[in-house]
Length: 339
Ligand code: P6P
Image 1 (spheres, rainbow, N blue to C red):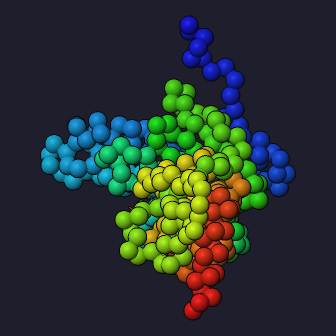
Image 2: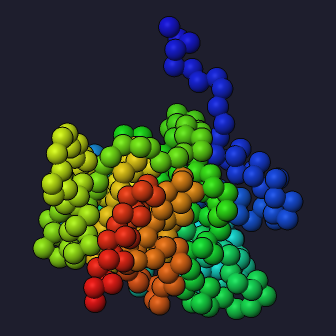
Image 3: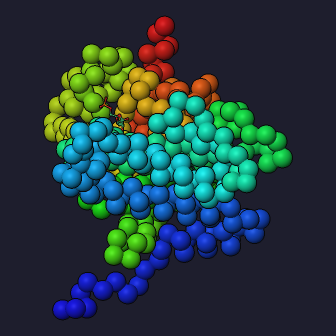
């Protein structure tokens, strides 16, 4: 009947952000405006990502168009929309994008007090096969609102990020967000018919499924600690008798999809070796996973305690349930003790 598809009771992302601002008496509303700009950019990216294949047919996005010109790729377009909306918000001082070698310093009158580190379209190599991709962002407040912003405002530990989140463009478009110290992760699903992110996952906590997620094609590069851990989830320990239930292997190859599944279902995601970028992949995901009740580590130390030495610094990362991350860290301690 007509009534079945009418949603008549919901909370929106905007609503939640405004209510949070009111609960923080000292809040100026700047972060609210900044997050509103990010959510608008994600709506725009979602719209374009979903039409990408069709737009290619008419040569608008990706590949070449009818005049055989090289047309901007989705990750370039997504970067443009993120940079423009963040700058237009009037609340940013520094933008660090995966797509730009140098940091962007926002000039007056648009300059604000927040630094946003983001990957506008992470996993974009998966676009052509329809696999989920996403926007990842982490937000610092400048150290001194009265001083000239410098690179030192973003080469800081992840513990100093004030908020972080991602927007996954999958079977639906879901924006997942947490604030430093809140211990709460909330997920909002885009209802394109009204252009609102509607609360669908209140206070997300890591699931309990035994899943491991790693690109085993890199096994020849794994150190003893990772090798030992991966063997331990696939094979019974030596001398084991009785039933052994191996973990399930799940690997999408798009960090947002692998982390979103890890938070919802549980298990562990590992990318050993310095591939993932600290400021706009590792730190935001670490903040989210910790707030969802899990852990994120380099293997040897808490991910959020790392201090990146350059904008696009990379790190190995292990994130997921505390039990699994602890198991990996224990193996690194044993391995290092033998040195
Ligand atoms: P690999 C995507 O290119 C990305 O940056 C992350 O989203 C993803 O987790 C990782 O790289 C996948 O890397 O080497 O398994 O293809």
